[in-house]
Amino acid sequence: MMIVSPRPTASILETRALEPADGRLLSELGQSLSDVTRRLRFFSSAPRTVERWIAALLKADQDHHLAECLLHKDDFGAVLVGVAEVIRTDEPGLGEFAIAVADEWQRLGAGSLLVRRMARRSIEAGIDRWKVDRLADNHTLDAIVRQVGRTVAVTTAYGVVTSEHRLELESGEGGI
Ligand SMILES: CC(C)(COP(=O)(O)OP(=O)(O)OC[C@H]1O[C@@H](n2cnc3c(N)ncnc32)[C@H](O)[C@@H]1OP(=O)(O)O)[C@@H](O)C(=O)NCCC(=O)NCCS
Image 1 (cartoon, protein in one colour):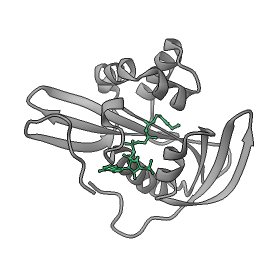
Image 2 (image 1 turned 180 degrees about the vertical axis):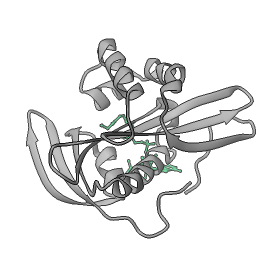
Image 3 (image 1 turned 120 degrees about the vertical axis):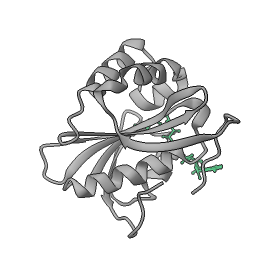
Image 4 (image 1 turned 135 degrees about the horizontal axis):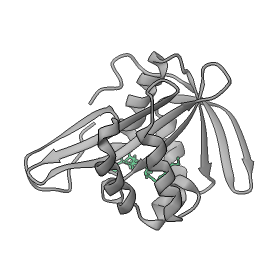
């Protein structure tokens, strides 16, 4: 898939595990998220929620808590385009998936790319099912998660849809 950058300079896109040293980039991403994106990601637009999200991500150990980021680097510096994460549950092989992409980068393929990378990493880590919570009107999330897995269960309560997906990747998927 080709991703078209909204910035008109020579640039590269890179996915990698989020690192504790990414605090500044993560804060910039968190501060940039619109109220709509915050509501879709956290079911709340309160700034405190974003602060807690950043603190938790910076402690991601890449085993219990997997965090994968997409970075854009050009003459202006680096920006964090988005972050996908999976947190193991008590149920073997089941992880809770969540994702956020910066507003100016949405609908350009970044979410699909992060979903595929995280699906690959999850399977390598022994997690072959994702539990996903989304607001009922968040059809985009449902569409991109279905690119990497089959929906095996869905429940809805108070406007939040909880679905479970069995990860299924074609060989060769998961790279940039
Ligand atoms: C959900 C989210 C992660 C999707 O990320 P994204 O980068 O916009 O996703 P993509 O660009 O890969 O795909 C989104 C849509 O763009 C389309 N698309 C993908 N590449 C495209 C391209 N090059 N040109 C135009 N459209 C494209 C996809 O087909 C998809 O369309 P659809 O919504 O009609 O199915 C992002 O919208 C987001 O961060 N939302 C707020 C947070 C959130 O909802 N998190 C989920 C709860 S945890």
